[in-house]
Amino acid sequence: MPSSPKLFHPRHSPTSPFYSRRSSVLLLVSCLLVGISGFIFGLTSFFSPRLGYNCSNRDPRTVKVVWDKAADSGGVFGAGTGGIGGDAKRHKVMGFVGIQTGFASVGRRQSLRKTWLPPDREGLQRLEEATGLAFRFIIGKSSDKRKMSELKKEVAEYDDFLLLDIEEEYSRLPYKTLAFFKAAYALYDSEFYVKADDDIYLRPDRLSLLLAKERTHPQTYIGCMKKGPVFTDPKLKWYEPLSHLLGNEYFLHAYGPIYILSADVVASLGALKNSSFRMFSNEDVTIGAWMLAMNVEHENNKALCEPDCSPTSIAVWDIPKCSGLCNPEKKLLELHNKESCTKSPTLPADDDS
Image (cartoon, rainbow, N blue to C red; front, side):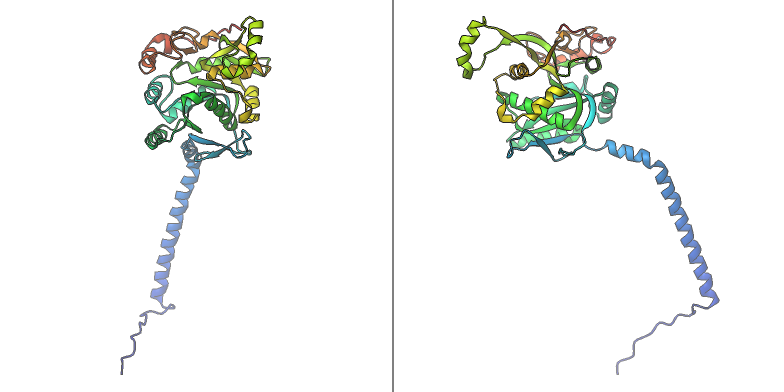
């Protein structure tokens, strides 16, 4: 016959004195552990506001924006980091500065990060808090996987981009500009939206002063103004008789490296369908032509197009030789080493409007 299974019999019953002593010890250890846990939890709760603040600061800043092409409504929604929707909370700032850049401009971006644009997250946040301005590089997409892979690495390292779902092509700059203004308006509740190129030397403190000025007109178009031909598009040849009649009249528009639109103007752009805009070959002429259709106040400010740093210069670039700095990667660093660019007092610039 198989042997019966062995049974384990405890040497002490639950009612024995030994068992009671062991239970007391276990109870004491359990209470001690609970007390330690409570102490740790209390410390965590005490420091939780600071920890929460640090964590929130680590939220990615870079946002990818795609267009609702099916509806062609001109609206936007977000994908990837930080979505955009009708009920999304827009960040409140005085001005949003979109630094237009491209895939071939890695060197320019690095030079900017070594000069007036802080390369680290904390430095950028301090600049934004001090000026009331937000700064992001604006770039589209490419079918070149290598370019997109390199961009992804740069985004992960610096986290200072706004990515547009539009092909990054020089011939399509007017489309990119419209996409930028619509995306910026959807993301930021800003009083002004600044289009800036990546090859200018900018003084953010002075730009902040310019935008903080009192203005009576809600629809404002600020820039270093020039006069350009009204009819530059070959599709508009049927207007030529009128052009001759007007004595080849010119209209006022801002130079392309930097200009500013007030919130009301950008809201009007965002409300229109993409297909309703006439696109010209030049982006600055395109914006200027659109402004003709709106009741905007042209504010001419020469401090936005100075060839060298001065007590009032806001943006410095090689006007009229180049549309921007002629050798931006080198020139940005040279300007930043000049006391007149970095250490001169910040004075409000007078406009010439």
